[in-house]
Each structure stands twice: as C-alpha cells, then as structure tokens.
Length: 211
Image (cartoon, rainbow, N blue to C red; front, side, top):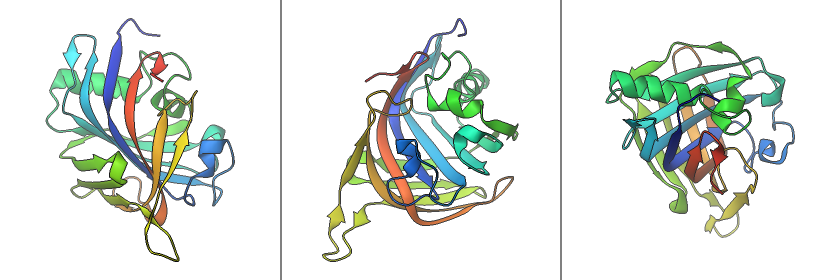
C-alpha cells in the first residue's frame, strides 16, 4: 500500500449487461458470459492525502470478454473536468488501485483484470443519483448517456424494491437494485437496455469499505 491515506464518501450508480440482480454479486458467472458496464460516483466528501476531493464526479466504461476475474478487460477512466491537476492525479491513483491494500476496493480489484487502460478523459460529467429512489441520470457529452430506475412489478406495475448486502464486499455495504439503460461511444462502445443497475452509498478508504 502506498504512503498516502485516502477516503471517499458519496453515491454510486453501476449499470451492466446482466439480468436484474447481477450474478457477479453472488460469485456466479455473468448472465451472458461477458461483462459490459458503466459506473459513476458522486463524491460528497473525500481526500487523498492533503488533496480534497469534495464535490467531484468520476466514472468508468468497462468491458470484459468473460467473467471479471478471468481478466482480459479494458477501461476508459472518466474524471471531472473541474478537478485540478492535483485532484486529477489523486482520483486516477484511487481509480487505478494505487495507495490501496490488495483486494480492498473494487477499483483495486478491477485494476488487476485490465489488459488495456485507455487514456483518461477529463470532461463534464452531469450525474445525479438517489439510491433510495433507485434513480440515476448520467450524461458525459459524446461519451456516455445512461439512466437508472426502479424495477417494475410485471403484474401490478408498482415499483419493486430489492437490496443486496455484502458484509465483506469491496464496493458497497448495501445496494438498492434497479434497472438501467445506457449507451456509450468512444474507445469502448456498448449498448445496455433494461438490464441490471444498482445504487449505493459509498464509504471507502485505502483499507477497504467501511461497513
């Protein structure tokens, strides 16, 4: 682990090509055999050493040919254009698993599975998320457009609520499960329609998720 201590608190929206619930959350193989996803985090408060990260957004577009742990993946890191040079460097270190104990965060775990890390994109990230309402909306001009919403009961049409709790998870403690739609352009082009999404409050450090 690096010398720099870091912590972030905020909310996240993750949307992938799996069926609702996502088998990967249960150490099972992805629904369609491969993994394609977008993920965004709104940092409410955070720091990397003395560098404050409050109010910044980050995102990723990712794709793996099989299950994540089998590797061969690729990622486009996306960082808030409002971040200073110092903040950009700090965020990219966190996102690439630096200054983090092995296995402690999903950033660190994912970093070991990428064959290709595309150049980071510094741009505007319009991102709103409400985990309790299972709602999210993200727009990264020319790169990502996505939204998340609740699952509907097929009979009554009412909102269906389900949660996943991972007491030893490397991403969240408890997430709300919903569904999403997403389109990306650029180095990794994917199209996600009415598939798994989850929404969570994040509280993590270089030592892992605060449960």
